[in-house]
Length: 441
Image 1 (cartoon, rainbow, N blue to C red):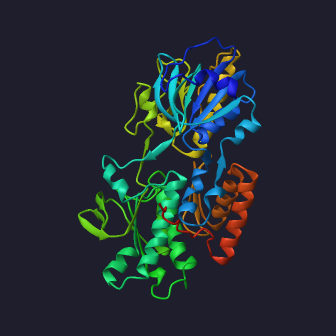
Image 2 (tube, rainbow, N blue to C red):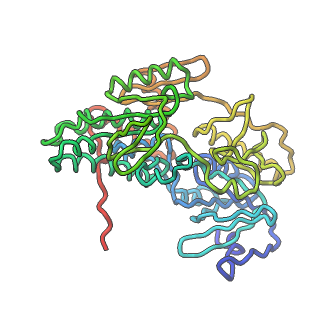
Image 3 (cartoon, one colour):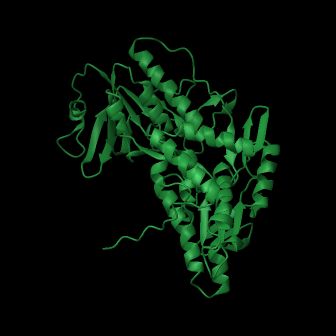
């Protein structure tokens, strides 16, 4: 690896890379999420050097991130170190860095590593798979009071806010303030919002039951807001109705067709009505990272790069975008920004680049195979939609659990999650109910 990256170490912090003659082509992949990891693995046997860059040293199994936020799982149970790819794949080098610039003309990217300054890295092929971030729709000031859920740090912040609200409620005498501490507002009723709301309902009614003498957590108010006319708007109406009915059975108040106008330290204003709350969570939308815009190509309203059917950036040979950072159409509809699509796109790009390295022309465009969409609505209940097939209930929940355990990145993750789920299922308890201590000076 050191020889491979030697030419990327400049004499000065931002010196340009001198382009020495390289016998092997270099593929630079930005992003260690589902698409980036899949692309790197698909290049396992390629005659090329692969540089995988991410600002974090771990890959997150995003579909279970909400369970870290709700104290069901610990961060280590849904994450895996990216660097282990160097041990498993000889042509991969991992770099912990933040990409700050992309220059398509000079075929270089600029990356800044902690404590090492900036460097420029040349590429022959570039894959951008940088994922998404919370979208506050022009109101970034909301982020201070309503955290999103895209990283382990976000999940731990949410967990601390929820558990801390109960601890504070148990110590104060003012009834109005106590009610505000025990009111939880979730903005956005897509899959993430529905899963968070359902898991939170189980937390207050089962896990925390009997844990406090001065308050009753089961009397907490959980309010799910959305500007759409129904929950799970990307699912069919019949599935949406079942999910909404299940949420209401769990005690979640669902309010749809309402716009959130203000989020501040006192709560939210939605539809002109103030809802006092100490904990507001944002699951209303996502936007692409800023890196696709660095390409100078066209992007959609969410900042995703508009790519052709081969996931290529127009007028930028050898530059591709995959996963949530890409906007690709299929049969007149955009490919959804879900994990299964990102994996398929990353795998496709890895194989496409490997073929081009062998001098073969790839004529088959990317085709997304939809395996169906699922969402969990509390314990023992999930909904599934795939084409004409629509199911819900306990058996669907078992299918969801089985699929997600098999999809975890490592064997140890699968064993830990399976053990934790079984323990939580039979006892109702959650082992990760921890509030981190504030840093001391």
